[in-house]
Length: 562
Image 1: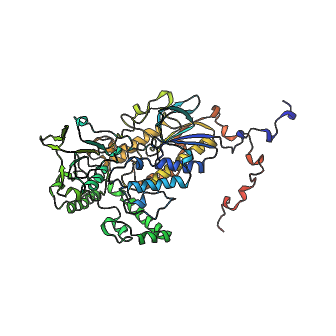
Image 2: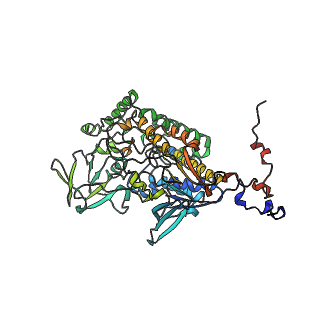
Image 3: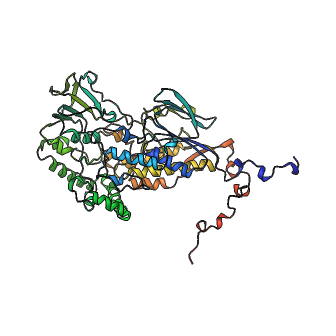
């Protein structure tokens, strides 16, 4: 080719310029908090983005849409459980109800116009990675028509959470019961407990909220408790009392809410003090003297609430330190147990009959309804098939241990990231800011794929192995590894801790600040490791609308001190 026939710079393909951001298709699974955050941040930070968010539910909100049982509420202060960029001065109470939280996140979805990216009532049923194409092939069922559609993407972001796959308890005779059978995760809103005899099975966070919510309405309530649990005093109680005059129920008066609206700086000060107190609690999760002091404090709190039925304390008070199982303040739960129309049943259930429940001591308690507040499958392996490189069945591999690299990704499944997946839960602290920073981290990984022309990215196996080893080492010195049955350990008493982050929530934030790109392995487009460098030119040289001297803008200059 002669010089005369070489293309001019204007004729070069734009895709070959160093600062061209190649188009990226991203599929997000789930329109809960993480999915809403992704739908806000990804378009804001990733150019040339094609985004779709699938969710099996007909509405956004995830767990706050699905959980509609009586008393459902946040068990951390409402002002701690909100987006950093969207403060809400109008929470009606200290522990916001599930409906109020749902309306808050629906409002955010509307404000930032993210429904345009969402396909609700669409359930992902399979995801397979195609190595030749470097793409995920995703099968999605339309929940209204049962039609299965197929989609592809460069990056798959799984925002399906840890407590999403509910299950019935394995109790003989459960299907034989002739009364009303309910599960906390799929509540029947038309059911009314008024003047009925009701059994509630469980003592986890759902049961702890359901019992006081229906206790005054039922004729009699039996709470079947297999394990033991700590009920904590309200989080940051002293701090909230400084801002509300309503006493022990921690409700804000209209005047107090009006003051928060009128003075954003006062609201910010209140939020920061609450968050600081909640964030400071991580130290109680280490074994030792402080954990013992915390147990003594919790014991006195529980004893005072159970003064009418002191015998319950010996049955419900754990032998393990607070935090081994999820800590919950459970407002009203102990008070409800102490009422005359409530029976606390610690004898194991033998079987269920057509009319009620038989315990191992032979007692048959007849009831009109049974509420199963018995939790979820927390194995991270039963949601839907995910197949990575070489047909890797991620669910099968995770059957024994869900190995990841810092909870976000795993070797063998390129271009796949998780929000609130294995090893990402927090014992205490602020979860929403973790979900925000996780979204930021994934944004940076996608941006790197764009800029560096990366076809496939996945954490190195050595990095995953090192993280697993670190988790084991960390948890051995914490209360989480004490013998107690917990969803943190996939329902076992002494198995490995698989659901929690190995550190404080502030520690997690630091880890998420800046990706360690060296912990990943990359496959580049066309197999060319230097594809990122482009054709020797920038887009500003062919587009007059782009400033060729932006490096002189004041915000681009790092002015040295004189």
